[in-house]
Structure formats: C-alpha cells, structure tokens
Image (tube, rainbow, N blue to C red; front, side):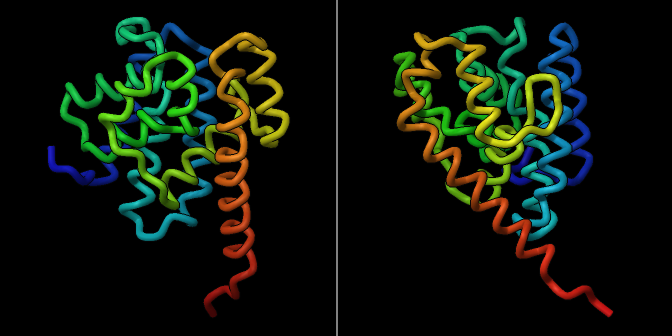
Length: 195
C-alpha cells in the first residue's frame, strides 16, 4: 500500500479490521464507534478530504492494540501500531495510532518510550482531532466533556497506574488539543453559509 490512503474504501477497511479485532471487547468496540463518530464530526477542522480520511482511519484503528491477539508489550498504542506496520498500513496511520492521545508520556511511565520513539510523532490538525475524539468519548461510546473523561480514566486505571504517573505531563497536552479543536469547530460554525 502506498503511504497515503487510497480512498474512503480504506476507511471502511480500517473499520472492518477494528470490528474484527475488538469483537471480544464490546465496550472497547463501542468506544471505538464513538471515537469514529466524533472524528467524523471533527473532520471539517483538518483540511482537505484526504486528511479527514486519514483521521477517520486512525480513529477506527486507535485502540486495536487492546485485542488479545495483538498483545505484545501490553501498551495498546504500541501493540496496535506494530500490527498495523507489519500488515502494511500507511506509516502515517501507524504513527497516529502509536502516539494517539499523548501516548508518549504513558509509554515513559511504562518504560516503553524507546520502543514508541521509532514511530514519528505528528503534531497537526489531524492528531489534534484524533485526541479530541478519543478524549471526549466514554469507554462505552458516549460523548463526555474532557474533564469528566480525565477523571473517569484516572478512576478506572487507579492512582498507581502508568496513566496516573503520566498525568501531570500528559493532561495539559490533551487539554490543549481538545481546546484547539473546539475552537476550530466554533470557527466553522460561525462561517457564513454559501448562498
């Protein structure tokens, strides 16, 4: 496959792969559906249609590393990215999955930062929109505000988890991405409609 997505068909292929891999994880699948819906809504903030398709593919694939069949390091962004790389997905999609939602800070807390750094970290409207989508959807796929999502994540993972250890560095990055996307969405809402 080329490094760019070929078409919207690749978005469907991403959805189908995620569904196959997450079939035994119904709550994770509901979260993935919710993230993909939020990403679709935020796609208007990322630019050309091709960028929106990259966002949607990454949204469908972002949590495939939770699948038992992909378990290697136990860190889902890394395990998912490794699978995508091995199976020939575009390197940009692989990297977006590897680094979604400021994963580097949690990787550091887990002692996996070096393994994650082999994938380039993108800072763009697409990565912002992926973070926004992931950080505004509950584990069961419902829309939630960022602060509630953060509190829920810490409650679920616990105070001694790598997520808790990464919180101080990770939270400002997540919050900033969410705010940037909210601002971009507000700007789009205020644009005059074409007559």
